[in-house]
Image 1: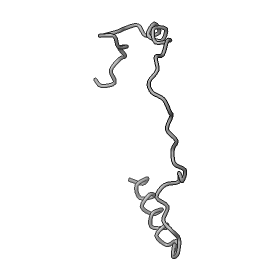
Image 2: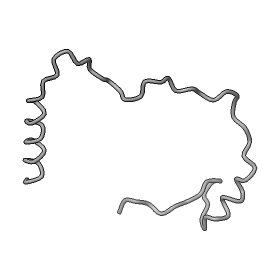
Image 3: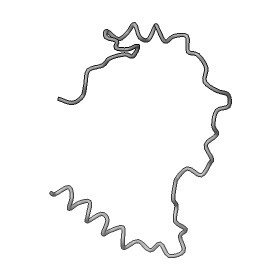
Image 4: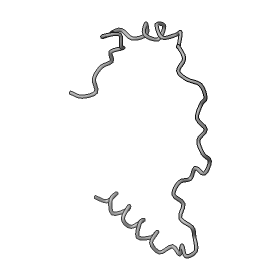
Length: 68
């Protein structure tokens, strides 16, 4: 509860800042992301990667679950 109160206190502090005339920023990234050209391509090391995993099911690697 103490941490939550500290967050609320900080937000209250921010409300005191004068932002008159400051244009809102919606994202810190101003450049447009450039997409790769071309299409899918075959990765030849697939079998080598699969050898690092002890179990496989239906052609996919099998890893331990994260839920109990």
